[in-house]
Image 1 (tube, rainbow, N blue to C red):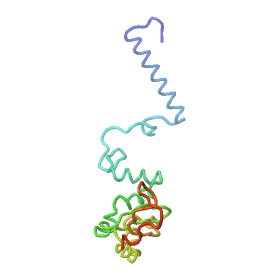
Image 2: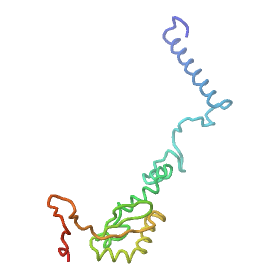
Image 3: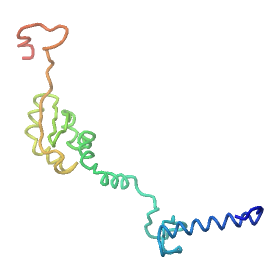
Image 4: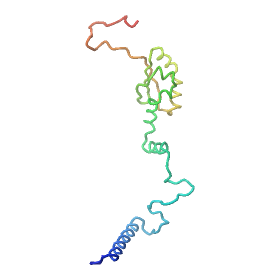
Length: 171
């Protein structure tokens, strides 16, 4: 910049310096290629035309699907579906009388509301595995552990009595 420049001369000097910086930066980024046709990192502007464009709005489900695939979250999402959509996965009648407790290494533990339902679910284990695989994917749940409701524990508490404990109470 010339010393003592003012007004239009100062503006012209600043503009020339900015152009020189932009051209030198473009040469270091892509040597030998200049012009607008190369698409050198510039943002697209204007009307995109009738075809699909990367700037078009994307459905949220598609964006989440790509994110889950890129991060490797398909397996944890499928496991979460077993717990979050239990009624949808096994049906409303079975879901009313059972609930998933834990899922570790492909083994799902299910707690039934009664011992009769636990027996019924053990008989339906094969079809339940097929329904779960159809809903959330194969190899998410490989084995079912079904147990009945847990009885109250009499071994601890403020009113614990030494000895055999209640025997004929739950007959």
